[in-house]
Amino acid sequence: GVAPDSFTDASRAGVTKNGQMYGLPFDNWTMLFHVNLNLMQEAGLVNDDGTPVLPTSTDEFFAQAAQFKEATGKPYLVQILANETAAYTRVLYTFLMQQQSDFFANPSEVDLTNDAATAVVEFMKKIYDEGATTTDMDYPAAVSGFSNGDGGIAVNGTWLIGDYNAQLETEGNALSGGYTVYPIPQLFAAQDATYADGHGWVVPHKDRAPELDAALSTLFKFLADNDFQWARTGHLPAVKSVFDMEEFQSLPHRENIAKIAQTGQSLPPEVLRQFAIQDIIGEEVAAAVHGDKSVEDALATAEARINDLLANL
Image (cartoon, rainbow, N blue to C red; front, side, top):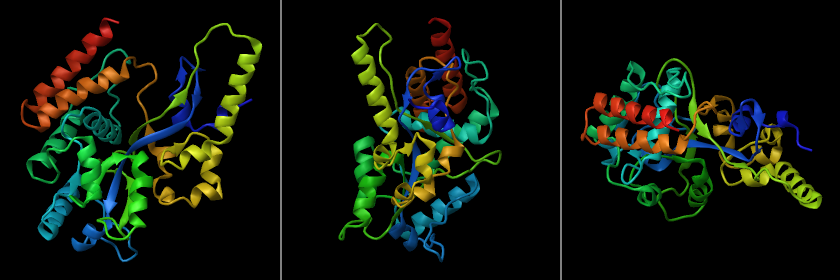
């Protein structure tokens, strides 16, 4: 069998409802700061030990963004801001969690009309308004844009580590000899936190032949026993012991992001329709960032839409 306590808290939470596990945790993923060290070096934002200088507050963020743009002529961030909802929502969640905002204290009712949410969206809008980010890239454009050196830091997922590291090890491209990756830094003072989610395996609950149940059990145990192999993609392991494996620790950049196993947070599992909520928040925050709505209007509308959805399930 597979012991429930063999999984990280973050991955286990993703398959737990009302105190019961309903699936096999498979990984955790999150948004990261993928860093072009070549451009950061050009901007004077690399430490003597070769690590990037990353901001520790919103004020430092804008100071470093201005320094970067003055030196390189390029925006500090490469973001997915066109035809997109998820990226906006994940960034909002991360910075709300850094403020210890309990915005889903009631899992049937979100609270987005508060100072914490306003501060985050105003920060996101200021990044856009001050030219500290690419502005018109959808997901494929943002992935290739960072590959091509269109900006210093890509805000994108764990799953891109392998591809970008391959560029690091290949000559003749924008990331040659100059790529690293870190969690989104703590820019708000309350706590170091990042929004994380994960994948899991589930099967329908129904009567099956005993040999099919046995086969499923064998498959799930195989997946848990070989969680390291999946973690090679860039996703974080679901099984705690993988973090201690020499093979995992020797993978590129993993020591930089391993702390997400402790700092990663998800929405409360009691919150229903999380994908629909993600789309609603993303639509409204995008409208605020692009200046189509005020920050206050966007957050109030998002809150009302979500609470109407949850009240009518």
